[in-house]
Length: 335
Image (tube, rainbow, N blue to C red; front, side, top):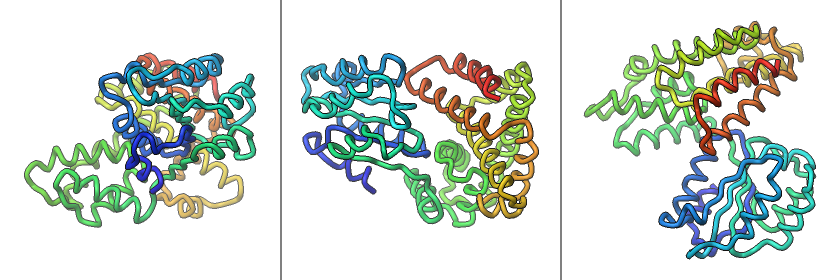
């Protein structure tokens, strides 16, 4: 894959600018972590690495970061998590165009978007002209099978094919959730190096059912504007020791499934047809359709944007508990 080849290069072989986009946040973050580990000087990382979140001060912060010379290093790395930059023309974007047209050789710039960019925008065309566009697609079918097997193998374990299928049925292609579950499975297995389907069922079934039900109840509370219940359920989930980003992934998966189900239902598809189209069991599709009655298409899309914004703030080191509580308020306002 293209992004793997980039991590095999030397620093002076890299392009100056990259746009990284796609819905699979796990793969994107894995690549960014690998990029930083490979190319940012560990001793001087604080001086030569900037992570920026798009806001009203983006242009000024970006110019300052890009034009600052690296300190006792060949290059500095600037990573920008974007919301609107590659979706619509933002204020003062012409200044960014000028920056890209005369980009300093001392900096490597990574734009990150979890949404599909508009290829007709000038900034997209300029990045493509002087740098690279990297698309991270969600793993499916054999690629997902291989990813699970490779993760298991990296710990020195083997897993039977039907157990891989069960993991996919439980967590789809949510790599962040799968990675967490695989770590749990390895811990449980101990010295037993072969993982069977029955092992998977014993380890994940209870947590899987409980967590899915809590997330369903949480989203339902949001739909009914019951903030106190939503906050209590969120607290219950976090007390189970789940990471905030993992919780966001579960909520996003539920809302995305609701949105997809609602759109397909509006096209006249039956529950079974929707389940087949989305590669899901009919039961969760039926639940999603019932739950989606509390939401409009627009509110579900806005809710996903709020989740994305919270996720980006967590990446930049914001207080996790506070951000998750604020998310409840924002989701209530979105519907």
